[in-house]
Image (cartoon, rainbow, N blue to C red; front, side):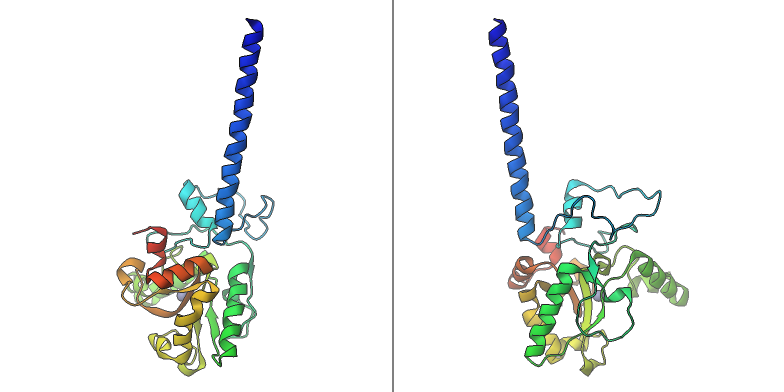
Length: 256
Ligand SMILES: [Zn+2]
């Protein structure tokens, strides 16, 4: 009787270990899937690029939000904000021409996006297309300064139309960059979309993992007017599907 009892305990332990093994295997495969779409897991100690002030609590997110936050398909818009604490990891300066020479934070992008941008600009140059970076990373604090400046100058209502509220700008992800060209004097204006540089970009950005984030006719979904200059890195696979299907990032990830 005692022996049978021991045997059944042993059996339960064995089954538990077996179950844990399969659970860990399935967890591993979901990480692999995310790696394919551009997700990279940082070791737990690798936090030096994401400093937190003393007393700051980590942002509480649901499982889905946490996954989104780490993936390159992270959606940031007027409905889905980033917190003041969110500073992207691995910010670096892409080796591409910019419309200014100072070493400002707005030159920075996340490493994978920066490398993809270099490839995109190199490919353009080989076809005689000279693209120029204008503005990439924008911190929460910088967004707050810009919004406050516009509100002082023109009132809060106008400020809300011409600038994002802090946390609402996709530039905080380190995955977005505004680009322009000499023929429109490096301005961020709709005419850029009609230049040979703007047209080349719309045709080829997806090959390098970028999308024109705010296309014409999708204002209701994105919350933004057409911006032919605003590139967003989402990874090659996502970019190509978004382009082929003529959808937005919101539609791609299933947000309304
Ligand atoms: Zn932009």
